[in-house]
Image (tube, rainbow, N blue to C red; front, side, top):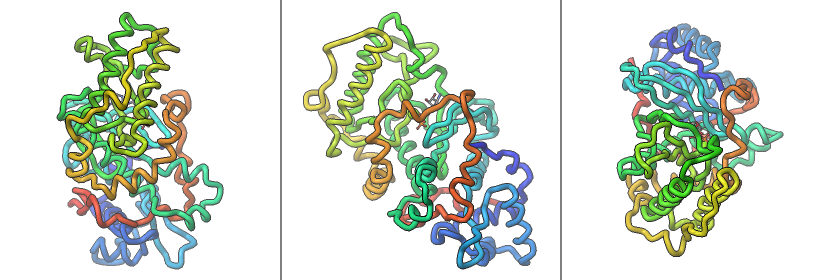
Length: 377
Ligand code: ADP
Ligand code: MG
């Protein structure tokens, strides 16, 4: 999906206030009544707010919901992106947005820079995008849905990924440096390298194999299983720091605790993924590989630490329920495309259905209120 950065420049303070009001309203309303937007925005003079609303709708940051019982609006992907990037910009973690370097089934990845020119990665989580597409009848889906709204789930994914990346980074794991997060977006360091998938030969496959397996074991010793440990989520550094530091591991929203009921299976699947890749691509086979029962001994508890730091048990549960289907599928090998091959998700908003409201608010108020929900002047 395209990022509408142009709108950033010309939106007025009042427009921004109205956009923020729509976000706030959507915590309790699937479709935010226009009267509520006016009330939350707290702007004098109805005509002014009306102008703001039509500016925002023109920029596709909010969308009119036509078939509701009342007149109302919902925040679009574009509007949610805007609010997150505006928050980064206010905190000076992002100054400019550059090229898109990846589009996944459930994320968009961009290179961004801060004022000093440091390049970073912006990962925008987009849960719910595909499920909307694959569900033929949105109306049935909406009637039957349990709790999942794209806004809420995408935000949970970002929060979870940021929390785990931070814990891992602070414990010396080779992962990107987590820099900032807001809503459904995270900012992390840009890793200079390429996905392991592109590797067709290696001067010492056994050394790389061992350090990847050590990573899996050390992660488990800290209480965690990645659950998507494959050649797409391992970046080989252009300039390796040492034999043991040739790669960086990314993409954590699906990771689980070693106490998870299916932990052994997930652990084995991560291990098998690496074994398969090494055999197929690098012609390297080894009898030496980690086994859950023998090697996944707990020495630390990042799984529990992270829960304590804000990603609560309830959030874990809700999130797990929502992504269990995609975790069952395992590798994201088929859902990730590099930019250049195909890059058009612009119809997403339409597919979501202009007349349908994707917002849902269950749990929205209870947990994880964003740090930047207040309209900024
Ligand atoms: P998804 O959940 O959609 O698989 P990922 O976090 O795996 O998203 O990112 C998708 C792709 O974007 C990766 O395969 C990698 O090529 C690139 N990428 C993501 N994060 C970084 C980063 N920090 N540095 C460099 N490239 C990255
Ligand atoms: Mg990935």
